[in-house]
Amino acid sequence: MRNRTDRTPTPPLEISEAELVEMTRDLEAVHQDVSLPALQQSVEQWVETNHEAAGPRRASRRSFLLGSGAAAVGGVLLAACGSSSSSGSGATTTVGGKLSSLTGDLKVAALAASLENLGVYAYNAGIQAATAGRLGSVPPAVVTFAQTAMAQHTQHAEAWNAVLTGAGKAKVTVTDPALTPTVNQMFSQVTDVPGLARLALTIENVAAQTYQAGIGVLSSSQALATAATIQPVEMQHAAILNFVLGNYPVPNAFNPTTDARPVSDLDGS
Image (spheres, rainbow, N blue to C red):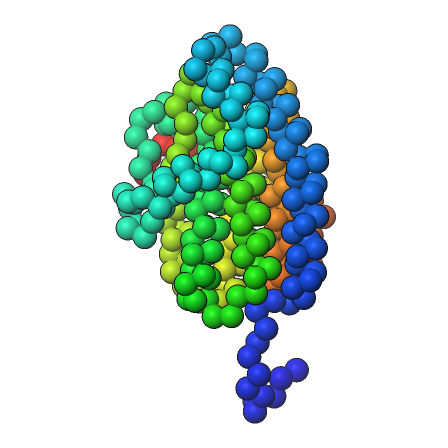
């Protein structure tokens, strides 16, 4: 325990940089070898069940299956960093009627895409703050983890959007309208790496719990497979963030759903 005369700065990580580097490397390896191929397969099967998926929409689906999800980071960030209808701090929250009119599995897909966009937005904002020196001492391993998690969230958003466009619907480029103001408010108070990790952990837990709840309401087997493939990745992100904060990596034996977002998030800004 530190005494009052100890002026040594508190380290930004509760684990070593080497440990975080190894965890991030393992996270990406599992994602590339297991999670992403399974996600691509579930999305392909879901789109194939929709007979309207033809022409340009089918090409859009194929572009995701060929691995262009990571290349879509710039497009999502443009939406996330544009003007906001509610907070003025960055994330897009305007919804309009197109998303609120969706029903069933497609509305869940739209909600999931908006949460994944929010994850991209938050990690990107954190990276920008870190590289600008606004978070104090930031180990390079933290930025690498954030970049890895952001890319995975981008691929998840692209998967949900491939389902939507395959059904003849528009892509979701907004962040969760109801949750975004809270995230912006939380981010405005972040001054260091632990604060950023706590914010990211909140978003990962919300996403994981939303997928957990969604599994109980989705109707098609392909929709269930898509949600069930992504949800463990969000929990992997959360486990690493818990390590960074010095917490037990899996605080609950069973994932709760108390913080799951409802599809009513899309009914207004």
